[in-house]
Structures are given as structure tokens and as C-alpha cells.
Image 1: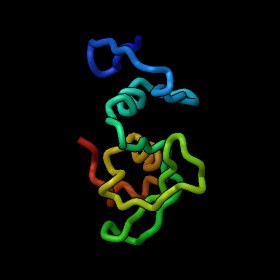
Image 2 (image 1 turned 180 degrees about the vertical axis):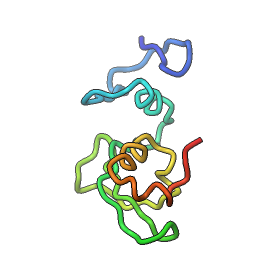
Image 3 (image 1 turned 135 degrees about the vertical axis):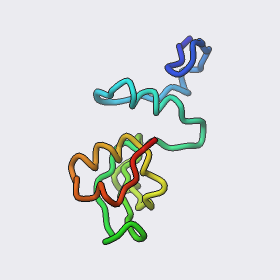
Length: 103
């Protein structure tokens, strides 16, 4: 039995459905991960970017639980509201004018 981070409920879950979360994560990041439904992927980190303006800006995403060889280039619209984007913008503050603030 496990407790939900997003609801005040407990669930019976088969051990095979559990995913190991490596490293140290903030409660906000854990809640973001918990809110994802089946079939969605979690952005572990943004590792690079390309493009000169907002229209062609793309980000290289490292997906949680996947190898680096499976990283993919994603448009801004797919990553702009993620915690990984917030972390990336701290490293590259010059991109902040091109990325709308999360709500």
C-alpha cells in the first residue's frame, strides 16, 4: 500500500508498477512526477538547447529512466512549464526573455 503525494488517498499497487527515483528531489519535483498519468514521461533534465529565437528554440531532454541515447529534441512548448526548465534557466539566464514564465 502506498500513499499519494497529490491526494489524501492510499492505493494497493503491485511492486512491478513502482519506479525507483534516484537522487535527491524536492517535494515539488516529486509531486510533479506523481501527477503524471500512465503513458507520459518525466523530464529528468534539459541538457542542451539550439535555435536563435523563440520560434526555433528547441531543448535536448533527458527522460527519467532512459539512457542518454534516447534523449530527444523538444520544442519550447513541450518543456516550458517543467521544473527541469526552471533549473536550466538558472544555468542559462540569457534564455529567460524567450521563455514565458510558468503559471
